[in-house]
Image 1 (cartoon, helix red, strand yellow):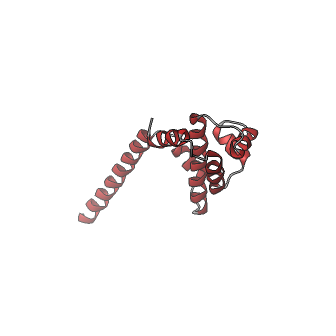
Image 2 (image 1 turned 45 degrees about the vertical axis):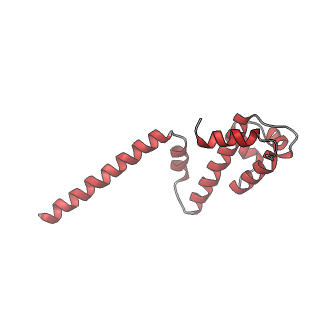
Image 3 (image 1 turned 90 degrees about the vertical axis):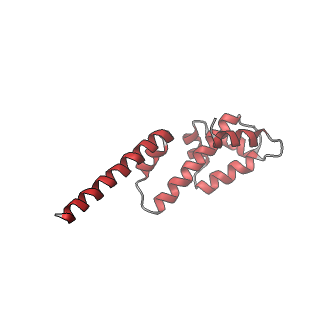
Length: 124
């Protein structure tokens, strides 16, 4: 597993980790409701309430999904405030790092071609 998920898994396994408070804080920081978090993480609102209340302990995998959903919501909120296309952002966050890297490489190549074209025009 990659860094984020491994870290969440290790922290969740530690007895002193207060996942209920951490989950509530992450959700609040992301500015989403329990219902929205449940939708994003593929669970139910009552389950979120039980997790945040400390009445039920989520599996490490579920905890990872919950924190990832909060992280994505927080990123989207920051970009929404900057008037960024959040649909495009959500689509980008939904693809693998390898796909994002290929897209970035393509974009950089396009920029280089544009620059070379402008430089050729200047010389004429």
